[in-house]
Amino acid sequence: MLPLALAYFREVALNGSIRRAAEHLSIAPSAISRQIGNLETTLQTTLFDRRAGRLKLTAAGELVLAYSERSSADFETMRESLQQITGLQAGQVKVGSVEGMVTYFLSRYLASFNKRYPGVNVAVSVVGSRAVLELLRDGELDLALAFGLPARNPFRVHARLDQPLCVIVAVGHPLASRRSISFKALADQRVALPDHTFQIRSLIDGIALKTKTPLHRTIETNTLEMAKGVVRNSELLTFLPRYAALREIANGELCAVPLQERDLAQTSISLITMPSRQPSPAARKLLETFKAGMTRYGATAGRG
Image 1 (cartoon, rainbow, N blue to C red):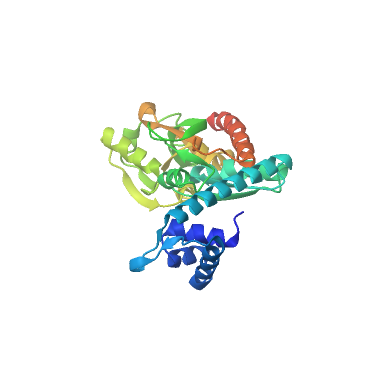
Image 2 (spheres, rainbow, N blue to C red; image 1 turned 45 degrees about the horizontal axis):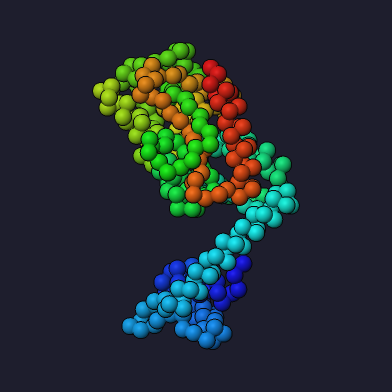
């Protein structure tokens, strides 16, 4: 942990101005100016070139910034080592996930992890497919559950759950008894679709285009829970992998009918991290929990 004056200096250097640093830290700019002045007095050197109303690091400032970066990294290394010694009695893990994994998978395995490691705080962000990748790449997450990774990507894949897209209908729907169905046979069906914040929507639109099948879109939503709820209470249908509706299928509320165009409809959820960043002990334990869970989850979700 950096001394206060050094921490304020580092924040100003990274943000490029005292005002932006003050906004980021939620403190008064005068408090930052005072601490930097004290630091310059203590070190007997000027850290910023303040000419023309701009803040630019001097050579001495560059040296002090490099020292603060090393000190901050050393502190994090020490903190992680202490977590290992104390048997994960403390720590924080930041997890990002697409919505389809929340209800059945994340809720179950996070509860299990919390019971085993009650001192570890887990912060979960549920966001769209593209946003979860950006957050992980920008260092805002320790690990993520992402839908449909591009062929070329910078991530390390620890586990993957593969399943084809299915037609999701209520148990009383005329299609509920079908073992499979062609996408083209759905041309006259009324559908509820996830909006374009979901990568799964791009997959659905792509199949519709390739099979020349226009969809009768009745409802569009930015939440899968809404799409499933509407389908459960009507004769509309939607498209999801089986794992995204597993709770409702297990409860006898919804049915999943696989599409016959399996080559076009294959989906996957990947458990990923950034290879350039070493996971903390708590993050590694949560990765192990999720990896084991995805193996069991895949077997459960694959049963008809």
